[in-house]
Length: 181
Image (tube, rainbow, N blue to C red; front, side, top):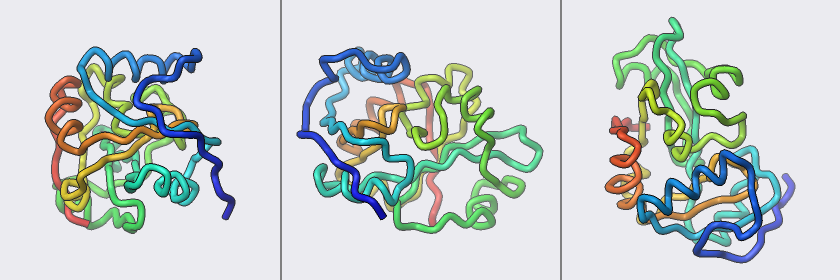
């Protein structure tokens, strides 16, 4: 496994212009007075590549899975501990859904405006129709900090978990369902 090289920690958005989706994320966070720390790094498309980044942040980065039911009528974003194994049957049963599977890249782009490797809770700012059901593994709710990409996998943001739950989600108009993995 390769090690992702990281920059220093910053407490603000980048000074240089970023992609439109990343700029939209920073605009949203500023508008809603949501504090964060940011670290820039090489592309980190998998949770395995994020482990080095976690050392710099002093917190775990959650795994984000974009899922669909078998009829492709319901989409879910599952946030879970990076070391936890995804069991479709367990999660499907807990939320009363037909068997869940991974959504396609085209569904991800259509619903969340991001490509694989960049999915995170921040993508909910793009779900203005509230088509996405947010599922959060109970273990993440016990963590003081929450880390994720700002809709682009070349930076990672660190938030207080309580700010995600009490500021970010209300600002997006999303609620969440707790699952136990």
